[in-house]
Amino acid sequence: MQNVVRIRREPEGMTESSAQAAPAGGPVITARDLVFRYPSANGGDPTIDGLTLDFARGAITVIVGASGCGKTTLLNLIGGLLRPSDGELLVDGGVPAAQHAKMGYMPARDGLLPWRNAIANVTLPLEGGRSDLTAKGRKERARELLERVGLGRYVDYFPDQLSHGMRQRVSLARALVSDPQILLMDEPFGALDAQTRLRVQSDFLRALENSGRSVVMITHDLQEAILLGDRILVMSSPRGAILADRAVEIEGSRAGRLHELVVTDEFRALYHDLVDVVMSGFTEVPGAAGRAS
Amino acid sequence: MSNATPAAAAAGQAGRPPSPPRTEAAWRRRARGEMAVLLSRLALVLLLLVIWEVAARMGWVNRHFASQPTDIVVALGELLRSAELWSDVVATTAATLIGFLGGTAVGVLAGLIVGSSNFVDRVTSPLVAVANGMPRIALAPLFVLWFGLSIWAKVALSLSLVVFILFYNTKGALGTVNRDHIVVSRMLDMGAWEKFRTILLPTCLPAIMAGMRIGIVLGLLGVIASEMIASSNGLGQMIVEASATFQIDRLMALILLVSVLAVIMNACVDLLERRVIWWRKDSK
Ligand SMILES: Nc1ncnc2c1ncn2[C@@H]1O[C@H](COP(=O)(O)OP(=O)(O)O)[C@@H](O)[C@H]1O
Ligand SMILES: [Mg+2]
Image 1: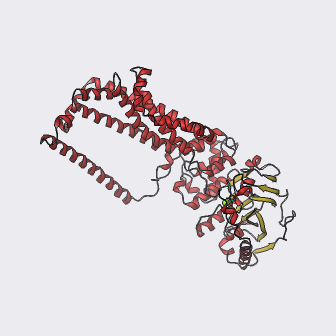
Image 2 (image 1 turned 90 degrees about the vertical axis):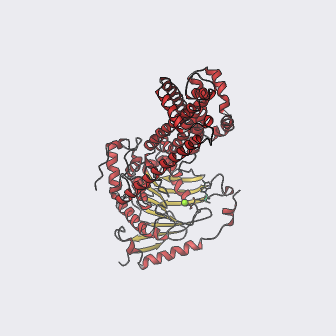
Image 3 (image 1 turned 60 degrees about the vertical axis):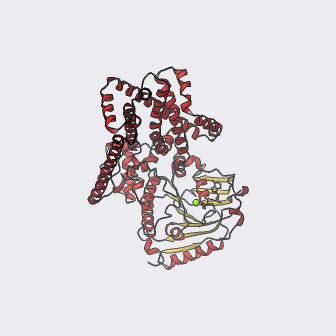
């Protein structure tokens, strides 16, 4: 169990040459001088102001940061749910809103439809002409995904009848069912208890391993960031600045070893490093929340 | 444990939830509880009837005004045996159903349209509020003027009562659509129809069903009221007749009949609700 976690610090002032071993094809998401302001909020101050960033293809990029710093806003921009106020944001070379077929999205609260059972929730992305599969094929595919996240016995259960962790896994299966190249996740495992969280995180890694998928995941949990991320970005308010950019290298498969990884010295070192960064960026901005009128 | 999925799940919507694990003892305990409630209910009703009967016989209450259970039973028997009654029951029921279904359809549709456009909502809301505030019963003579002594005068009054409940319930429910569901619909590039079918309508269904539950009783009330004010047939007409001729036994029997009709209609809505809102079977 030695040297499994290796930490690499990026030079200050990130350059375009990402330090990661970027697979062929260049970055999957590129932001150039990205600006976004909510029309009605913060007195017109931008939530994100001049962000320039690349997301490596095939990597899990985790964004951490205090609540309200703009993480969800950035994810929704990438998902094409919001439009940049200024600057450029490209997903796989195109405008985000035009790339929905390549994306899977996992909202913070599972977002499952209560009137559909687990399998019918998972088939949703395959319906409405979004896939060539027949109704039978869609169900088979959905069942396969549910089995992969350990819910093969619960395909007929409605969300109300499932535990929180199970619902998150159904949501994960739904996000993966169309085999998207890009997975966007907004605090997917928040609000889960510690054991369930490790379990779901393992399921997540297992479902993802060797898939070549690019993931952008938001979390407020530093442990989760280190365990799941190939790269960790620390975001801060105001203006959604990136305070730190860390690469995490873990040898071999992580799935199933998460509980071992958390007790390594390397893990602890990176954890403390991140805590330092997060706390250094934690300056209360009185204007940000106070200007409600 | 294998899950042979029922073929019924073809549309991707159906499929029934396996009942959550309950022990046999729990079932038995529950069944015994239900039985106790049922028996107590029956006992309470009997007690009230006996008190009423005794009070009438002892002269504590004037039996010419209040009647008494035994007399009402006799009157009810006479009523049920008369051929005339059934045509009136049919007339009242038909008018109620048409008014109820029409009011539901119009109310839901209007609620969906107005609820999906903030602009339309703001333009129409004062108008709708005024219309809803009108004392509908007072409009009954007007409807008779418009439609004559036909079924349509009753239907109009009934519909005017039902429509607003469904309108407000549907419109209100549209405002409660889960934001995550909207995000999902947008990420999947859902068209308007798919979004309506898979998200908006199911979101509104519980509120629509709750509206229908109130609507059916109010619809019946509207028809009876219309018949009492001006009509050539129907239970409302019979009620007026009975009270005008001081046949209190008959009047009471008719009122009882109307109540039974309301209960039956309510049960039908109940049945429908359980079919339509399948995903809530086990919660609550
Ligand atoms: N729909 C919105 N309209 C106006 N302001 C918003 C909206 N959504 C978020 N904000 C504001 O933008 C900032 C960033 O929000 P968000 O991206 O949700 O933060 P995070 O996900 O990091 O917690 C916050 O100050 C928040 O109040
Ligand atoms: Mg957020």
